[in-house]
Length: 265
Image (cartoon, rainbow, N blue to C red; front, side, top):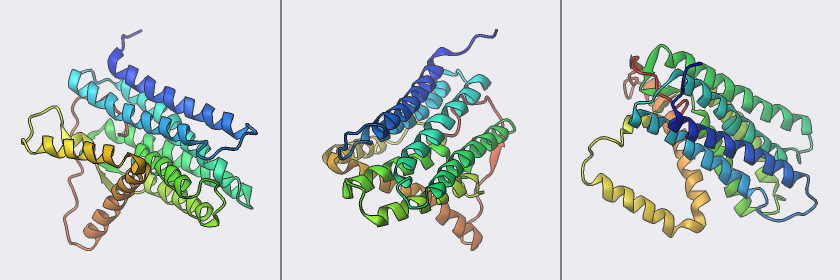
């Protein structure tokens, strides 16, 4: 058996661990008789932690030159669990309170299937070319929109007794499912190349953003939700601009080089 690179795969394992732990937490809370506000909050933050680790595994692999085909496949399998199954189960606990429970089942299953298809398409494209942008919404971004939206809606409606929240969630889930398998282009954060030299003013900007996050920590979920919604809207706006002839279509790809460890992130 061939040897594997340990460091980036540890980050992927950590991402998978957080996703599985989030699923177990949802099950434990859902079967508990104790009703408390913000009871699913830990599961949301575990999925967000999984997204951070997923972002780091690819960055570490590129920094240490430990890219591998094994890492790509393992990362995709972890993504299906952490960003497909875990958010779907979390949202199902809310949508199951709808009058039509079968609709909740269909919506959450659709999200998982579209996420898996998105990852499969990414791996096929990755084996041929090095993408400068993502075709379709990346599954970590879709999951991030779901869980930060969950946290935001829970902050304004802790008891989940407002009907408009239950009406928004199905629409959001179906929309994100479609965007994952669509041909809408989304920017790749791999182009940031944080390991290289940058202009000096980039560092104060990063410090300012961190300081703002700390200062507004009580509204962190809302800020993150706005950020993810902004990313989703950015792709749609750019696609609309291309369709209207206001800007050229971005470069599709560059010749394939070493395959990065990180998957759809």
